[in-house]
Image (cartoon, rainbow, N blue to C red; front, side):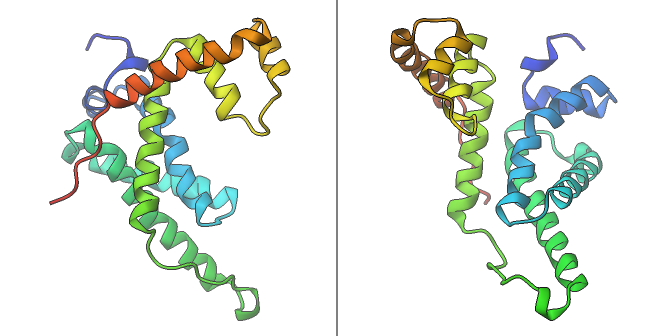
Length: 190
């Protein structure tokens, strides 16, 4: 198959994965690892358990590759699969604890708002990956770096005058917004 892998659609990457393309698999995992890991982290699982969930989701994806044809359905499938794997990991962890060690339960299912927020977060990540490197770097520094660096530090890192950050940020946010609007929202299951 032809085409640059990093900018391939999910549908194309899934097809390449079904053809045993390891590069496509690596890009697909890199594209969605943060989304999958965010679910067990939000439930308070330890970092190593969150990594276990990621591994379980990857194994489940390999098994499900023949049935997942539409790349637009992939983020929602990953969220559901990661949520189930997280519940199972949390259940196993609770079984291993004594009653005195058990953390309070936070509820069995994430609210619809949480799922919607995860889907929106993935749309932003996907759009961020499609804008120019300079804008991606600037927005990552300003909005996705913890702790948030000062404007002086961002200006130094970006090698640009501090006074240019605001207008450049505005242009980059406009580009990001355009990309996000071009990404269709996941369809509601019927």
